[in-house]
Length: 177
View 1 (cartoon, helix red, strand yellow):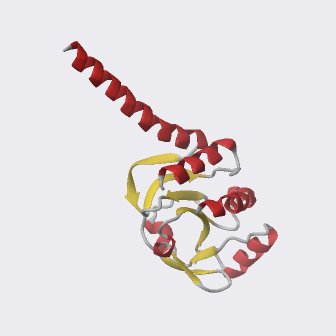
View 2 (cartoon, rainbow, N blue to C red):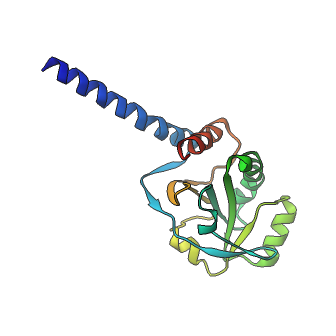
View 3 (cartoon, rainbow, N blue to C red):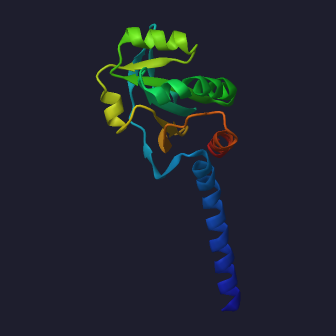
């Protein structure tokens, strides 16, 4: 009986330690981990400047979908650092997407120019995608796995290229292979 208890206890500790590794990465980065992960609503949206992007077309990549509006101060502050993280992680199969809900094309072009954004800006003209994702604010980001599951979400990160965010992205890239 002692042997069984010891094996059970060690197994339980192992499970807890593995579960907490991923949870800690999310927590330290200021990202809410979704347990269990949920299927990301698919969408196809027009890109500012032409063309379309669909979530389904990005399957197989880690995807960060950032919902913003060009007049939001937090969005404006975090846009450049979001761009820098995208540049750093594109070779690792991470796609960063900016999605503007109910914004005018003119305002988006000015935003893109002012902040030197090279990332695709998707136009959610009627807000249907934001509604499907249950976006409550202007600066929410959803972390989507290669299998199309939302594994985390954040509200206004501020500065993306932090050590804790890099640690989380490295964890997602390694875990999701």
